[in-house]
Image (cartoon, rainbow, N blue to C red; front, side, top):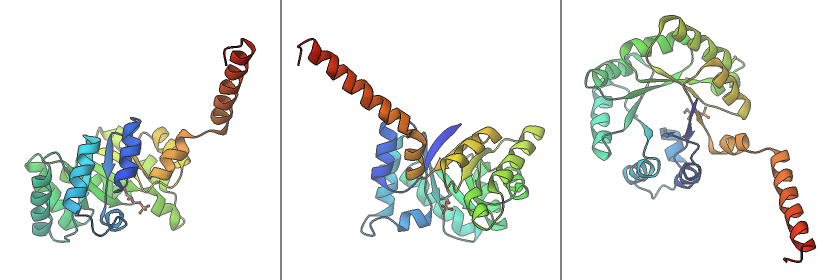
Length: 221
Ligand code: G3P
């Protein structure tokens, strides 16, 4: 399963890109709003793309089809490889249908049920983003929705790539990998948690200490 970072923070993106664990970046208006307000969004997005050189989803904020298509045109002028992130509303699906006709990749976001994912697939979405953490937040089972969506995909050989989004912790990532999601888009903090194990840290410390002890006993230090 591929990992993307769910962030608009350049430092977080550079940090994780430099160790090779991510192949894409998903942004949204709320993530962009957390960044320094003096930053130019277009320049920031271009920097993000230059850093990752892979998938970058950029979200539109219009809620009408024509507005979404206008925004998509603008984003594609920033960099033509952009994936246009579109909300899971009927007017959004009309935009997805048109962008798909033009072979422009789309990521349908704010999906909370397998039915919504199916509708987005049928409209021509390249990616469907299932928001599992927000389902957990309201007492539903987000992983179950990802699992059910994957089952439907397997049954019918559907084409959209399934992105597990709104990830809250490492177990979410593993459960989505087991369910068969193609991609998990993961916050920086959770990416750090995935890589960390106390036995790895203590193991490294012991190896370094034992090596130094051995060198000392040989008189090399
Ligand atoms: O990629 C979707 C994600 O940004 C939503 O996450 O944490 O706002 O539910 P969250």
